[in-house]
Image 1: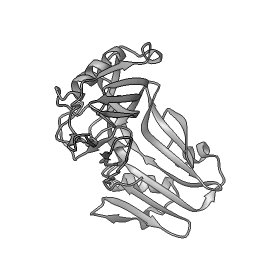
Image 2: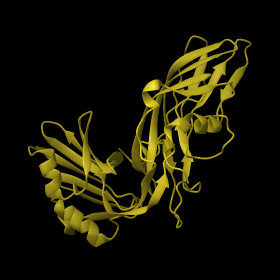
Image 3: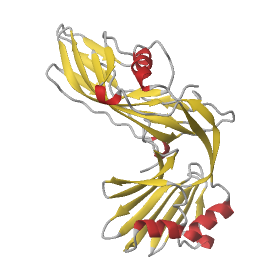
Image 4: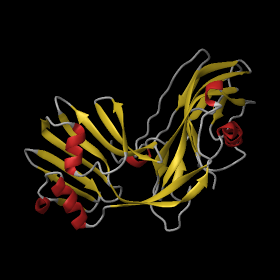
Length: 309
């Protein structure tokens, strides 16, 4: 994980000549939602257009007549979106909490965090450009970013302790969590109302515990209870956005060029934004595009804010 924006341009060929240009930006606080978060503001909003922009894929099709069709902000094809039978009866509450949060920013707070992780607080260095507290010796390296609450500790010699015991000794596992196995390690995802989030601590294993990294929150406060978007309404809401009829940044699809999209899996998770911790639907489905000589199919991933403002 890192804090720099990245752009990836990927070119692919299918049955008919087709070029896909996928643009993505990745920030530690926005991996799950596909959102690029900008800087701060004062008034709480579910989605603040001044701080959130969605980088959507741009797809180019070489048509049989030699012309090129660009699919960018909306789907130019007639289409339908449906729910697979297995997701129609997903059980969800009628309302759900949205949260605000604070992160550790004061020097004395960071010193306490460093000390709990075994870092000599009196030897921390502060980088005014990256807003990071840094330390390195022959035992470990440490970094903490006051702009995001992200921290990382890398051990030169892997720790032989159990992950949960180590994290509790460090004082960074003081929340309800769900263990999620990932490649090379385990993510201790913080849960809200029983639902997992992209907030938590990742423990990387390599002959023991090699590193610990994640987000540290100083405080979490309820911003109120909001009505949940019913699952049955997702196709209609998504269709309005895919058509370009509704200009909002509360959704993302990895591909909007299709004539039929079947959503085969829906789950609810919490994700962090600059102002809040929001419940979000993660979507997975299969698409088909058959129109004017163009034939394409594949899988789609996406997200949509799960509450109504």
